[in-house]
Length: 155
Image 1 (tube, rainbow, N blue to C red):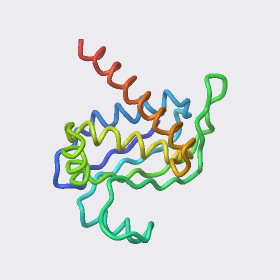
Image 2 (tube, rainbow, N blue to C red; image 1 turned 135 degrees about the vertical axis):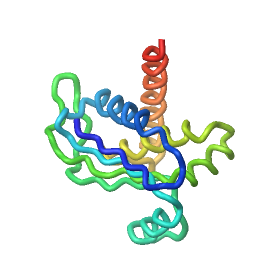
Image 3 (cartoon, helix red, strand yellow; image 1 turned 45 degrees about the vertical axis):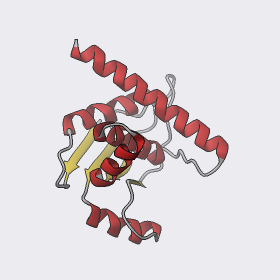
Image 4 (tube, helix red, strand yellow; image 1 turned 45 degrees about the horizontal axis):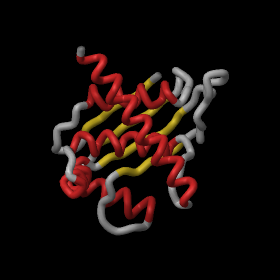
């Protein structure tokens, strides 16, 4: 799997951990090992520009996903075909504000946003109540399994 992680922001981001998370999520969703993913971390200004350009909404946002080949999750029996998943762009400064409001640390918020962004690349959405339930349930499951894997790896 080719996962590129670029921190173009002024905030420190644990790029190695983000790579482990992305690998974990893609493995759990049976994405072909030859799939490509890009994670980019940007400051408020560039995120605001992207938000206006692509979503026609003012101000910065926390995460944007730009799917390419419209890959969908595979299964144990059948992985997805190889392809280009796309880009997930995260703004750590917005994540920091959201983390403070939610009462947890910034890195946990960034992990959530990366997972959320990858799920969007794979066709998940949360516009409708049933979609919201499915996407956020899977997001929580993936974050929990990643935390468990990280604890095992630390031993």
